[in-house]
Image (tube, rainbow, N blue to C red; front, side, top):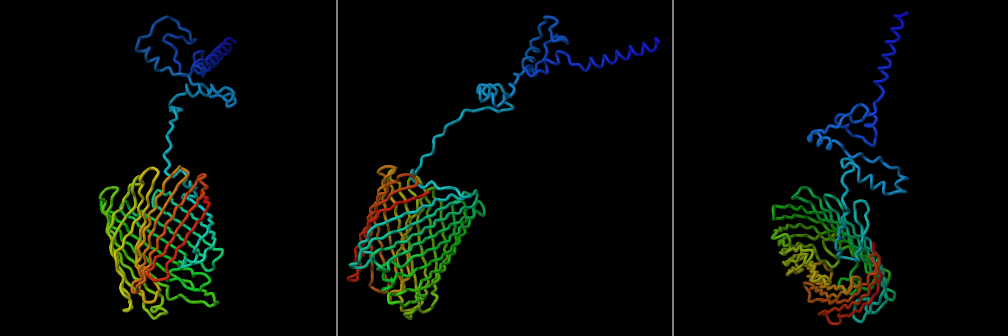
Length: 493
């Protein structure tokens, strides 16, 4: 009996001791509380949490005790409470640990960059391309729509469309410019004219100092009315199609840059439909052109780069002998030297001068040669005034009897001045000279214009323009004058 009682007593004591060990003390419960998380009991504290004796801790231990104590974080508030009391969110962000939330810096307001074209097309993104489409509607009157002496005047309407695009890749680059226009005359037949131009440029970055440049082009146009090469008595001037492709390898050698390129061009003439109903073939005008060029550029400074260039080409007609019994295949070369400017805020573009020569397969055709010049310069004279100079020279094909080729020189100067940011006035003067080698024919064209553009917004603009065109020919009875006035509206994106 006593032995059994002893066993029971020892078992109850062991169970009571185990239960007491599992029950947390008051100090443990205080430490686990979210309001005092991380707190350490002071020196000399008992298990109950009360200070048993008033004894000051050594300074070092007291300093360590202060460092170990951390500010208790504020428990996250419920979203509904934050909406009703936003101060809870500010208190939570202020008292939260920096290791968790990070530092909050004030918002810096940056000044927006200056817009050089406040009413330029903003464009939109399509994939990795930035596109800028536009359409323009024009209506006006041309006092000499036929561009001949004592020509007839007519009202006309023109529709123009354009799409420009540029890639936004980290490497390589592609740009394109697609333009199309059609002009219809109300009172004159045979002078309606389409005009389509397409240009695609691609740059492939092979290495840090090596790149490949590709260029594809297409054009659809007609002979100018009144031109010596225009077909007489036609329902409309036949279309002329041009396809071209060039490829060039560009290699940098420190400050020296070397470019070697080749190209091919195809020109096709549509058959002409005469007013009497017959059709005239122009197949003898179709030809292919093959070219090669070599260009060396030296970087005198980041903004000034002189260059020299030599190019050669060969033109082969589809028919070795044209309908007049003349062999018009030819070979030519061009030498030029110039300078490229790169100051976008002042002057940029390039200008060159050189010499060109072309010889023909038929002995009866005289060689064509002469000085040539090319330029594409933009000068920002002031913040409101801009000068643009464009010039081009070359030796063109012709079908005029007895003429081997046309030595062409043209130049145009345009001055733009912003009367207001939204109101821009411009004037231009251009000169074109055509010398038909092998004959005495020389035609000089003078073209002047004045225009005013009023931008209502970035997407809408109104335009008014007046043009004057004159032909001065050394052949009697060929001179003419044309006055053209028009108004238009331009929509862009």
